[in-house]
Amino acid sequence: MAYAYQSDAFDRHKVLHLHGTDDRVVAYAAASNIPVLLPDGTHVELVTIEDAGHDLTISQATLILEELDRFLPGPTVQD
Image (cartoon, rainbow, N blue to C red; front, side, top):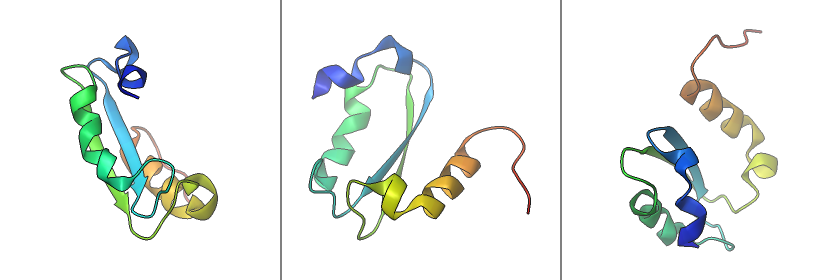
């Protein structure tokens, strides 16, 4: 799995890592290892989503959109 994180595309960029505590595909315990796998200079922000599995964009769509809105620069969409 480590090779997936070695891309230069991550180098000196911010990474938002969203991970559910009930993920049965990639165990939540693995979340703490990901920053170590990324190139030096990469800033990783881990957002833990309690009781969520691997399908975050489906099961936690509103929360994911809120986190992306907070993390990404630029104007936000207002109701």
